[in-house]
Length: 200
Length: 235
Image 1 (cartoon, each protein chain N blue to C red):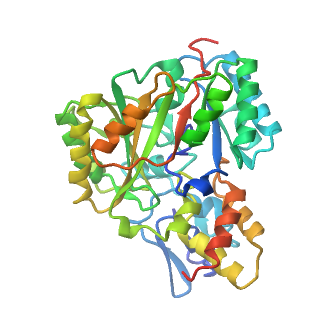
Image 2 (cartoon, each protein chain N blue to C red):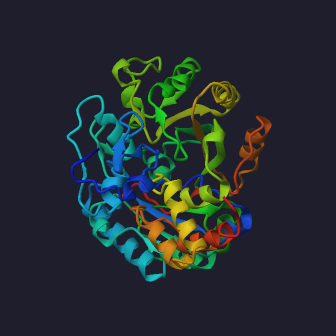
Image 3 (cartoon, chains in turn purple, green):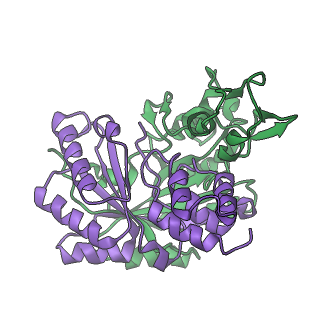
């Protein structure tokens, strides 16, 4: 099972990204990944993530075998609530939150935690003319491994235009190839609504 | 991957699923371009082929490298590491991999969604080796090196993968050199790449890192990954 989720470089503007937070717990090789306590702690975190209304979460079968558990949320208030619980339970496993850095910093300050490390995104370089439309990228980059192809998104774009599928149903269909469970369906609905007002 | 032409009914479901546009319809049969195919398994896993014409193949060296770098569920046999990257900053509160005064850098070739030939990795790694970059030992990319000068094993260079992450760290003062390498390669590479910068943060203040990045003409995205420091070395 995949160890990385590739939640960096999700494309979007500030307002749009206010509804897109990935919470990840990761066991450390040769430290807690091989221990029963580590595995038990990771399962506990998965339960906490699941109990707090994620938009999506890594499939339950993976909780016992993957060194990582992940879930995506559509608001920072829920993330704050989860971090408070994790702080209180003091499980000792590394937690990473992907999303708007300034908002995450504010949450941590509110509950007396400090940022340990940041992974900043400097964006995309090189032959950018090979990239699809920005709105397509906003959807496809929500699966960092790029299992959601631009043609797949355009296929549902056309079906929505022809009123053969609802935006909500299309967003659910698009989420399927993302096995890490970090494709944000709520945000995809919003982007698809914008996309269908465009002529691609 | 391969598609059994006798079974294929030309429905094109696999075509829209392919991240690299490797599948086309010819005479109402889906055909895979073997150069463009990165063996990611997305067509096999998610197209829902109604006649089960899509088949996986037992890949041989060096083609197997495509699957190891492109499939989300493939385990990396070279390194015994699953996935394209490592724990990097995710467990930095436990491992201390990135200390004060150091920058971790991730350069992911082929991302987002364009793919890359393995030979492109060398455009960066030879120059990075020259400036003394410390490559991440656990990275699947580092396992492709044939020497300590950042050269890639010859037989792998023409293989195509969905993406490959070069992970390394440098002292803060060498970021200017890394920036020049990024700018140089940007102008000659035939694909896209993303860049990430990792830094340990003191007292919730990261303005000096933003200044350092800004001085080199880069724009930092408002969203990133934040390790919130709840990990403990032993639990």
